Amino acid sequence: MLQLERHVRSEFAGVRSTVPAFNRLLIEGAPDLWDPDRIRSRLAGAVQAVLEEEEPGMPDAAPVILPVCYGSDMGPDLPALAGHRGMTPDEVSDLHAAGTYVVLATGFAPGWAYLGDVDPRLEFPRHAEPRSRVPRGSVGIADRRTGVYPMDGPGGWQLIGRVPPALFADASVRIARFSVGGLVTFRPVSRADYDAEAGDPA
Image 1 (spheres, rainbow, N blue to C red):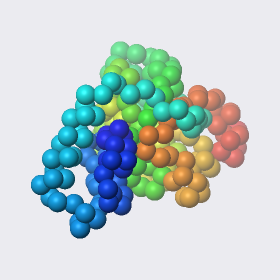
Image 2 (image 1 turned 90 degrees about the vertical axis):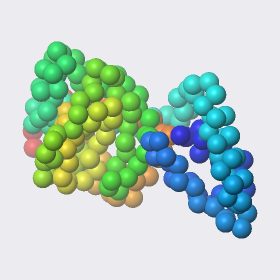
Image 3 (image 1 turned 60 degrees about the vertical axis):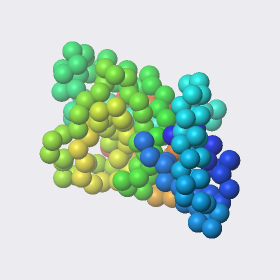
Image 4 (image 1 turned 180 degrees about the vertical axis):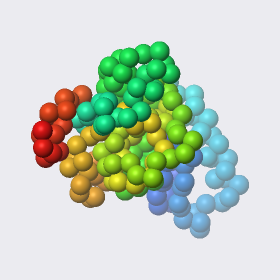
């Protein structure tokens, strides 16, 4: 989708804005410059051209590195996910932290980034009934995606850890931190290090 967005922005006259999602691309343009039949044909050609390109590599920008404390009360769903996959909680957290994730889309809440894809061994469906409150900074997995809750609120993802909430306290900073196509990695930290960064008592 990112390749298609870049292609449209560079090759199509009159494009005012584009909003990518997982499998959709919203294009806002100037109607006086676009003939409906011609633009449909050109878009179909652009999609085909992107599909025929070689698999793109990772973006060049350095990833955003987020410290995360896995397990215990920070990640209450970690044992169930590990058990379902026949792994230990440490194996799950190590596998999650080993990944480099692309920001595939943003939304749901200011500063929320849909990150993907997780290792297939970590895929796990969201809860059938969401929690009424998920703490800010919680790291979750839902199917092939992972992400960090940027604020307190309801949510149904499987919670495996938590990032110090101070990193998400400023709305403008957390929105700017993630942009579509950017990279995110997770750095495991101990509970003591988490408490120190979070300003919590040891």
